[in-house]
Image (cartoon, rainbow, N blue to C red; front, side, top):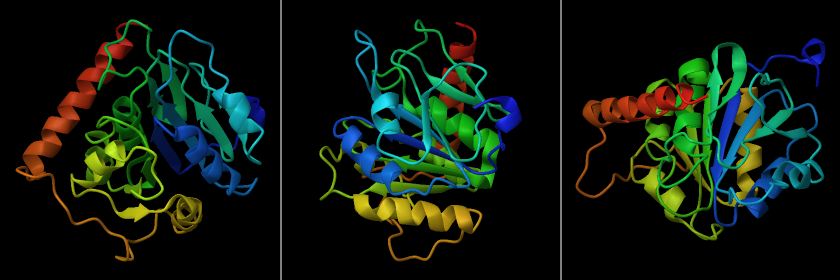
Length: 240
């Protein structure tokens, strides 16, 4: 898509996945309409040793345009950008995408990681940011979802029965900052609803109330999360 064809997105959805992520992403993207009025940025934990075909595979399974992200790409309506292996994906002012150097610090043992993506999307899109934490191992995304919420955005996590590995969704849920815990086939309809409503209001049906055992994610933890993600972002930028 050229710049002249781009309708800059007002709402951006940041998705993170690991184990079982291809199926989850395929189901969600395949259920969204071709004229979906938002942009999607995806981080999936992939081996840096091999060329990724994730964008090509997903592009065949959805009406949306799916591409591997490059520095300088702009988040446009109905577009999907996938982080390449071994690079963190960040969003800068104006919806411009930036990739870190392959030498950038790993987060949760991963590069790309959800944390820099979530934090940067929250900073730029504020209440028009939506984070989606899908099936996967480790706790990637658990700091970033707190920043999304702090800036007024919404957070969705995949539920346990439909997750191949519930570790990533569960860690985010335990922060208490997940608005909706949904089975896989209900995530796309919820995204359509939230985007149509301008991120909407919490209907309470699937709102998470649990907190991580022994922790209370109040202002102090949110500040720590913001500092943590900002450090990752700055270190990534200095390594371009």
